[in-house]
Amino acid sequence: MITGTGHVLILGGTTEARQLARTLAPRPFLRVTTSLAGRVTQPRMPDGEIRVGGFGGPGPMAAWLSEHRVAAVIDATHPFAAVISANAAEATTAAGVPLVALRRPGWQPGPGDRWHFADSLQDAAARLPALGRRVFLTTGRLGLAAFAGLDALHFLVRSVEPPQPPLPRHTRLLLDRGPYTVEGERELLRTYAADVLVTKDSGGPATAAKLTAARELGCRSSSYAVPLPSPGVRTVPDAAGAVAELERLGCLSRGAADRCP
Ligand code: NAP
Image 1 (spheres, protein in one colour):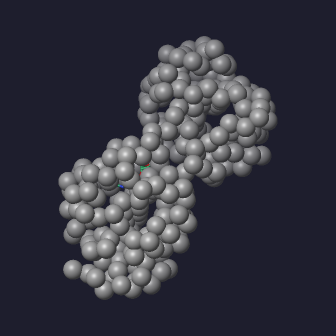
Image 2 (image 1 turned 180 degrees about the vertical axis):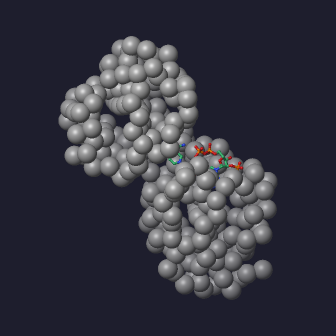
């Protein structure tokens, strides 16, 4: 039974979150708000309402859910954004609001892939000298200090925002954001003569083109594993699954709005 209004909060910052907002925003009897962390200077804006910035932890998030009469929360954050997901689990439990995790299916190695899985960026960095010399690094702007001591290797670092120093001595920076094509990734890997790719195992098609290009060019890939969603949180693989779950919860019907406190 939905006890709030027909208001859905999407915890966003991903392609899937924008897809979900695009699907839900035109629906009648429904208010859709996407929450962004506010880390990216010029984020791609989702459809519907938007709020920006941290809530201040699970307690204030629970208060926000009650104050804004949220009927359900979809955690569509990046699989590596573990803190906000844990906060969402705690806040929704406290506020008595259903939580659904939208998690992309993980990448699966295919024939010809030479993948090495690491437990952390430090672990990936420790394995790197044995894997290659010219590294295409796409693990995001944070945590690159793990690679800073690898003076014998050359890095092409791609991130949306400038990465946080310290960086490896031989670093070329590429500020860019997806989605990327296989052709573009192939060209990039060739031009840079990369022999190893280091990435987060984020899953989903939006950033998978580099894996195809790396396979074609015979690069090794090193990635570190996806944290699992909080136990007990219902998980769906895509925006369509999230809509189905909201329908099942009764959030998309006129009745949800009529049950406003
Ligand atoms: P995180 O470590 O899990 O969260 C750190 C803090 O940032 C949270 O405690 C929360 O602050 C705030 N926060 C994070 N996501 C938020 C959201 N959607 N709305 C409001 N506040 C949010 O997060 P992160 O790994 O830095 O990622 C930040 C954002 O970037 C996420 O929304 C994620 O979807 C997106 N993103 C992350 C990655 C990645 O590799 N981690 C990649 C692509 C996109 P309070 O405790 O103050 O509420």
